[in-house]
Length: 212
Image 1 (tube, one colour):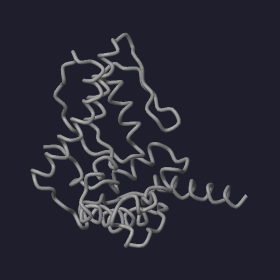
Image 2 (cartoon, helix red, strand yellow):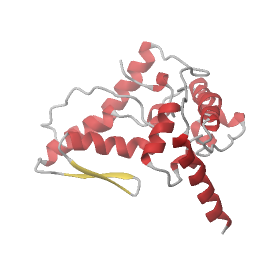
Image 3 (cartoon, helix red, strand yellow):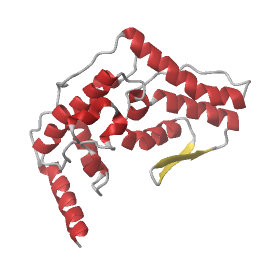
Image 4 (tube, helix red, strand yellow):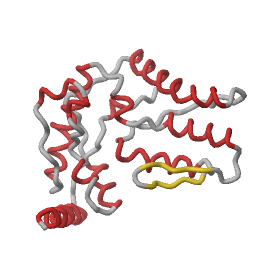
């Protein structure tokens, strides 16, 4: 019963956010780290190569397409981003139990594989990019979550759990899955409200993007 009351309370608070007006989006980034061009290019190339490798192994005749990397996507939003991209490519796709499920709409298996590669490589997940971080960059991402995202959510009246001890910032695994958005992402709020919050309080910093 206690858990039910907590869930209802969270939903009520977050739903009420849509009634707020005159909100100013976050424009600054605490502890922002700018990758050198060499670092950014290295991570981008590594991700693209790792995603193409299984396609090339299964379909040696496949022609590797040029991929334009979009913004880095929070892990929670990655399945939705993939489904949207796949559908734009004409692939049948749905989010099922938090995963992107897809299939042919008349395309050959090779065409489906290449389309999936383009979408997957073009929409890297936050954890995938962060897996190449130095300890300093991991700490900077933690600082962004702690000093920018969480205060922004709280000022909007949204729930956001307290962070673990700062010493855990040496690696993402040490954060035990903490994210200032985790209560919002696991509550039954509307997609409209979640989108509003993510626009007001971006879950990922712009420096995390791998666009050239």
